[in-house]
Image (cartoon, rainbow, N blue to C red; front, side, top):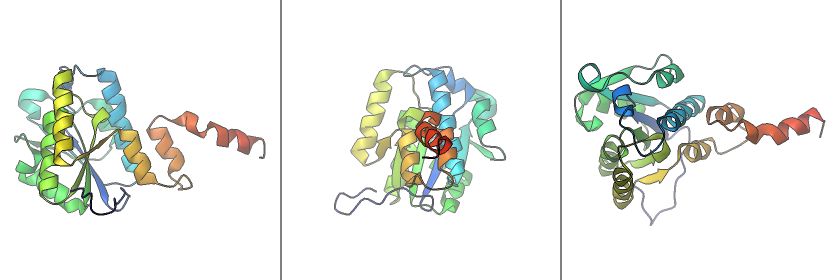
Length: 207
């Protein structure tokens, strides 16, 4: 849990893990706080950047075959070879297999994104805090069914000491250094190709 009495410890490729919760086709149809296309864009960018930065990733669905359907295809494509764990529980930590997969990451800082933000992201983030971990929620890679739900979900997270941010900022914190060999691929993943333009032009003109 974030402690204001000790220095902040940044996210790194060594201490952070990503948990993606219930980005399923059935749930996507109810999203009202943002355009579904924007939500897809953001969570796919988050997943791609996390892979480039070599973060361990757990992906889970709930009631995939009976209620909410599969993970949307663009996210599956962004995470080739990743097993998607289906469960019945609302809070992912109440499912033994998912909880074990998260524990097996061995990370002290967990980044969550879920559909919806006030349940699928918030409940496990609150549990992580209670377990002594640092929890983050990439709010723009979540979604929900009204603006009220979004506002109250974010308020609850902040009251509990969860760090809320946007997905690109979290990935920039993990990357830390623009001279990392992965930097260009991270910018590609978060759809910031334009950020590399000046450097490309300088290289092209030998400056």
